[in-house]
Length: 235
Image (cartoon, rainbow, N blue to C red; front, side, top):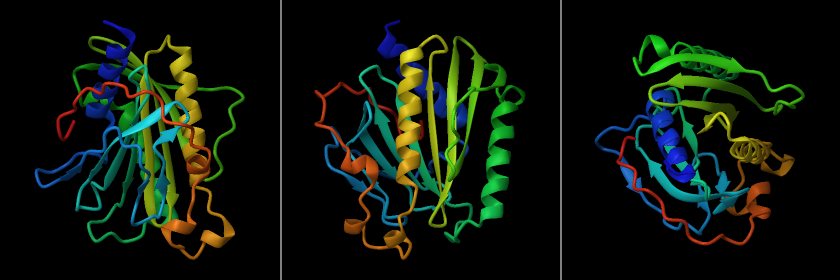
């Protein structure tokens, strides 16, 4: 299996086992943006997702009318590693998530991942990884895991933040022995965390045109188009 195909497999496997808020109903509204060279602006948070974040290119935006399922913005790099960003609520009425609910949701999500082997026979074990010397983003929580599964293993990143009453979650996985992809995943996390730091002029939920993200401002020239494996809805 090539490195690219292996990483695509890992990303799809992770989508199946870690997507605690990314399951879509049959009524999901799919929007495919390929090669998705334009920015995507989330109407609820006014977050601007540029075509390029670090080494990753935006390949798809999937929306669901149910706010609990929310919106998924998928990025992928040339190695085939996927970085999925979820924007969602905890209530079907789209009620703003409170800080205490955010803290509780992160703990529940973390424990749910650690107990995956109890729910999925393909998962042998999940252990938390420690990254010494790493500075945790001040506006969110991050956690790292090693997942032993059949037929392969993976390392995985979870990042969860509360932004303008919505939950923003990053999920990205890669082969345990792939230091390069681990570094790329860390860079993506840091860029996303920087996007979620509100500036004083943004506190009043300004218009999208006034909410330029640091990642959007630093977006590089788009790389060469990379063939992207088609992913079935709900994967």
